[in-house]
Image (tube, rainbow, N blue to C red; front, side, top):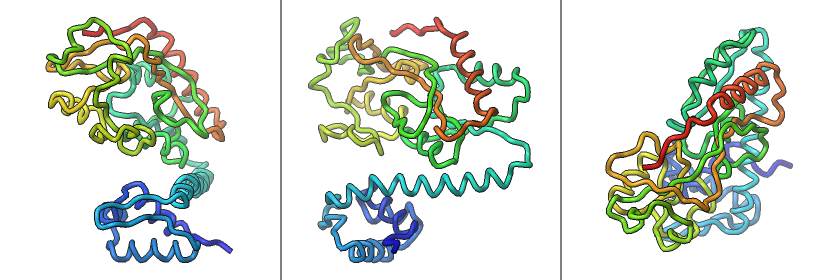
Length: 293
């Protein structure tokens, strides 16, 4: 017997990620009372409490944490199955590739990659899709995209194969009058007492509970200007430099890797040709470093 259908699972995942019934209902485009009723029905059917509700907040129980973890994978698997069926049904049409990137998150390599791929035999159209700070890997896993440019170790590469295109240093971004801005370089220990951002949708970034939640780099930079936080990011994500901020290399921070990722189950020659072109383009661009100022 199946205890949950995909719609109920989608409802629960939305509430578990938002931790707010109103926001989850808006995201799902349904009425909040109907969403609350659906979650209670799921809890009753499973015989466990998934959410702790008070007048001020919603939090997950251990059972809820488990269902969120496995539920995300289940929804991704269902979406991937549907996409695979569509792809098989469209086999006679002209194939194409969909590459998802974060705005500004290509390490200045995208033009070179597309040009290199365009010179390969049987090159096909590449649709470039702009994703958010945290959803690009999921788009590949569930079939909405064929490839993604991701940053390791920040993005989750579970279920994906990948090639490293570029390794770069990480840089602290600070208000210009911050005491640490007077130094030429920093160590991680120098930032131990600072308020750091929490990335929306990224587990483990909010352990301190101190920093504001951010969704993208432009929002983060505005918060640094307002002296709400400081941040450490891959160098290429901070290009071009904002004139009202200071940038200092963090010399003992683990380097960031820009990677091209795709599903472990995707063995199409079309995709392999694009990966080879991307690796070649990245190798040709080695040495084009941007100084930190």
